[in-house]
Length: 149
Length: 86
Image (cartoon, rainbow over all chains, first blue to last red; front, side):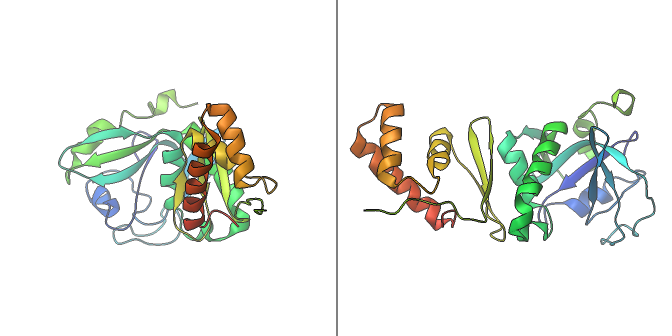
């Protein structure tokens, strides 16, 4: 959480989710494990769930924070953002959804919501080194809270 | 006579900018098709056979029927490998 907006870092086990949490000292961290994204007006917002990760103490807030961006983590030797085409963005998000995609009857609805989210929110691959420097390129994505609708 | 092609009943797909995104629940993977693959996917409607789909591709892309049929068969084999067809 920075400047009233949620920056969501996602990826498979080992991609660096807990690492980005540890590199975000001073920021409110909703979770380093599971996160809930809900509709919020015309856009989407992040809120916490009761489950605990390795680092975060569990839900300490019921607040919702509008999404600034969704960042698929890729560990690299330099920090940069890689644009994703719409189908790739949807695919990366769908692959990160826990268990809900196992039910065939839910798949069409899930695709509808994820498609909407990928249209409404910047989705990028974040290549990053294991230091807080990635925040320099991430925190300008999605505008500022002052510009949020 | 060949049977018409059918999509897997659990497959969910959407088209974005001319590319089909397809996911089959429980498989843990998704597939993105290029524009021609997307056109073939759209033509798989439970009514058309490989030959009939190839005829459409042959007309639309100005390629010989035999070439279109070979390419469509190869593509259909890939779809079957990824369990995207019934």
